[in-house]
Length: 527
Image 1 (cartoon, helix red, strand yellow):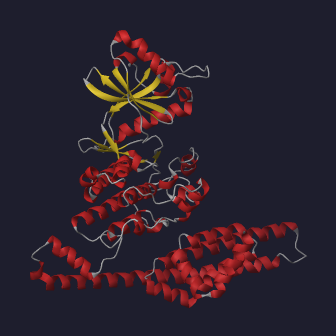
Image 2 (tube, helix red, strand yellow; image 1 turned 135 degrees about the vertical axis):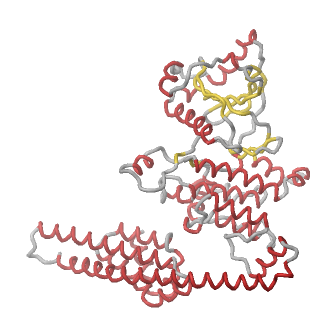
């Protein structure tokens, strides 16, 4: 959040012209355009009548942002201080800006959570346009606090120890989880949008770029297109999920907010250091974000004291969405487990580590050590049996789809050979090309199912899959697409190899140098 100088205006009605003059100088248009009439705005956006500039007194300018200005004001009806937000003049006659402004107010009001600022009123003011009032909070943003911590401010270092910062983080997570439950994604989570009030309040601010969440379950025809057709997702690159910046994901979801929260956790653990070097040129910075080249936290935190928190941060900011927390609740659970002395899912603790945590929570543990060890053995055995059963089910899927994948692959290649027959008519050739495409597509679907299943195998079963034909399958599907001259399918397949199946594919290339050489040759030709 930007720093602003507070400017005080008179509150008496007889001094109103001076206030209006000051406001006008700040927000009136300088291009001669006219603002929409209040009645037009009220009718278009279903805003109730009422609301006058004279309703609010003792105006103090708090800040000017990219689109709006925020004032502190007195609400005479309820005898309280409020924050009053209006649009700047060069945005007030733009329909898209007005809609975005009203949308921010309504989203913030709908979520209705203790860690989200309360919106009191939405209205239209003469010569000012749309406005809304909200709870006035005196405090600092998390970014300001971290800046003071990194500068060595002793008072802040004593007040904002790691547990207090994690409590602030948990409050922010609760607000975001509530927004997700109400069907909204924040999209611009960063330390500057977390306000810590004078009396301990924690509020998530700036819902201006929030998006509606794509609902779970079956989607109606055209629903994906409707969501994707909206304006590009806005945000701060250093805190944005890489899949949004790269275009792999066209619309944000819960995991994109999880990434933003992970970046905030990074700044907390590093006392204000950012996960990426913001001194780099914009294009280079975005490329590092897209590639997941995060500055290791170990450069800022030494030793193993915070290794679980580092693991939680890594999982929240994982480049591969399959390795990231699925929801804010999962991230919250790990943070709470860390604070309460329970194991966290982000890292696999040793038996001694689990035992030590248990002893810390239960000082009488020496009397029941044997029972604990026995319980752990049962737990380990159960997990082992469950993993074996899951591996067997996945192996069945791999075997079934291998047969159909190979069949369709051979069929596509045989049909490709038929195209060289000079006796074929143009209509026959076109029909054969259509059948080639269908066979290649069916083969890709079957192979994708195989690699998806293989990626979920246990490490030992995964290695067995690769050494008994898995690397051959990678090479076969690549050669098929390349032989069929379908470069788009080659690119799509390689992209899946490097994202969805990255560990499996990396092991395959390491085990089979011919596959690695094939990938290099194909990539060189694609480039």
